Structure formats: structure tokens, C-alpha cells
Image (tube, rainbow, N blue to C red; front, side, top):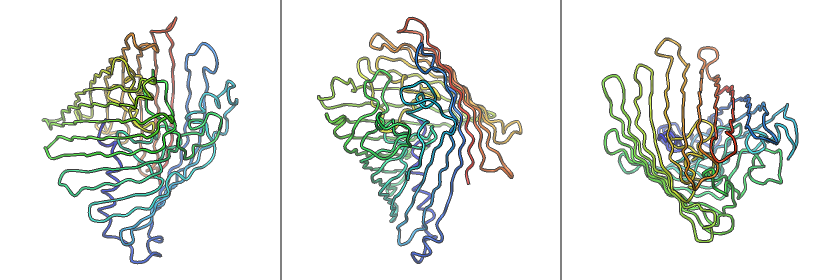
Length: 433
């Protein structure tokens, strides 16, 4: 996981650098505020390879994201973000074969939601945000890989007073998922809204993928004191999970980059673990994930990496709150959770290329091959995933418009009578303004 994941820090630092342009009056704060947005049209086609039920469906979703942030006034600012989603050609119904049923947990949920509505305050090198907000840290993170981006309600604090060090603290008491079905299986077909039911990033063998959580706390630190080395640590505590007990989650990561002649050499290591109160013992959620990666980047436009990891033999890992923490060194494009399921050794190879090096600016691609070799404690089977991504960012008159195509082939070749092969295509067209 790269530190770009900590986008909350990048946003705050940008706020620090722009504070010299603060407004003099409340009217100026609103008048000088900034508006930006995004238009989306996404098409997904999925064949899950199941022997019965909904097996092969597709869906076209369209949506709008609009964001407004006031200029700063005496250190204060306010921000709102509105999201919408609509699938005009979806068919079927709850529990009935069709695209509405297949995508009810991630892409099918019509309506609009106010995903951000916060008050921010910056003083010196400290920034505080209170209210609904997007959060992107290793352990508390909303996924943006579906039409509706996940959000949280609570408070966050970022401080950079210590040289080369960023301190992070947060409290959340509600979560906004992708669709209403993710939060409540009886509420079908609506866009996600804020509730006490959270998506939990857990291994494929886990019996809890979403659960009631009363509230959660997190604290983290990022240090870059040694040239080329970034150290990250984070802790999260989820209270009253499934009305049973508390869960603690831990994240440690080291990223080291060595500039070479004509390329950069990277070494990464990640450890993640979870522990729970005894009332949650039956859910087997006291797992861990230990991974390492070596990479070569910026080599005449090429990037090459190899990663390997191992997980706890008997328990699944709670990787974090929201679907964002699903990312691991050894996961595939479309899903990573089986790479940290209990009793799993996982591997990933990746090759990327930036076509700017041959005169095609804006075009990039990467290919991934991932393997999750699961042992006797796992029944869902070994996984072999092959995936490709092709993305083009337009320039000139179409600057802001991006188109991407993803394809993944997943083979589950153990634990069932026959190998189950699933496939998925995802096409995204986005215009940011």
C-alpha cells in the first residue's frame, strides 16, 4: 500500500499552503469558495461462474459528484459534497435473477446523498474537520471503486508540528456505504446513507463482512526522517461490534525508495493484525497479514514489482473499517480479500507501462497476476487472478476526461467439485471539472 493512500494528509497540507488567501468577511468566504465536480458513466459486466442463480449480468450506472468548499475565514471553512447514482436499464428485483440482484451490494442503488458536510478549522500546523467527510487512511478508508464513494461521519485531526512527521487522529460514529443493501438487507435499491452498520474489510473466510459498530477511534503517525524511508503506524478501535464486543486493528508499514541510475528501487513491508473481545471469539477475527514487496519503477516507462505475504493460520483479519482497507500487496484489481483470509500464502506480480515514453501522453496500463494459496483451514479454495487495466487521460479541449477499461479473470480451483471461473469487465468514463 503506497502512502498516497493517506490522501487526508495531502488535502490538509494543501489547506495549509492556501491559508494566506483567506477571506476578510463571511460574504467573501462564500463568494470566493471553490466548486468542482465529476460526471460519471460506468458499465460493469460480471459472470460469477455460479452453477445456479444470477450468473451473468451487466449494469450501466450514471452519476454526478459536486463539491463546494468555502474560502477560509479566521481559520474556519465549510465543505459539502453531493453524490448521485442512477442505473436506467437495470432489471430484475430483490432475490430474483437480474442486474438489480447481482449488483445490489455495490452498484445498484438509485438516489442522492450528501456525503460530505463538514466544518474545518486550521491553526498553525493543525487541521480539524468535524462532520461528514471522506477519509482515506490504511485502517479507516472509504472505497471509491464503485459509483458511490464511501464516507464517514465524525471528526479528524492532522498535525505536522514535528519535523518530517505527520500525526493523525480520528473518531467516526456513522458510515455511508455504496448502496442501502450494504447497510440493511431489507432496504433494497437505494443509494447508501449514513448508519451504524459498517463495511468491514475481512478475509473471504470470515463470517462478518458488515456489522453494527457503535463508534470507532483511530490514531496514526507517518515519519520521513530518514531520506527515502517512510514509516507508517496506525491503530483503530471499533466499539460494540455486532453488539458483542470491541475489536482492535493494527497497521505497520515501511516504504524505502533508493534512486538508481535511470530507475528507482523500492522495498516495502506491511504488517496488519486484529484482536477482539472474547464475545467475538466464534467469529475468528484475530488474524494477521505479513507482506513484503520489491519493485523497480521509472525504468524507461516501465514498473515491475513482486510481492508475497502470509496470513494467520486459524483466524481471519479485520483489515479495517470501510472497503478501502481491502488493498494489500498481494491482491488483484477487483478484489483483495482472499489474499489475507486465514491460512493463506499469497503472491502478486505486476508490470506497468506509461506510454508517454513513446509519445502517447496520458495512456498507461498495468497487468497483474495474483495467487492465493489457501491451506486446510480454508474452504473457499485457492485463487488465481489475472487482470489488466488500460487508462487514458485526455488533454487539450477534453482535459479532465478520463476513460479506463479493466478486465479480470478469477479461477477458484480447490474446495469445490469443479473449478469455478469468474470474469468481470469494468469500463469507466469520468469528466472532472
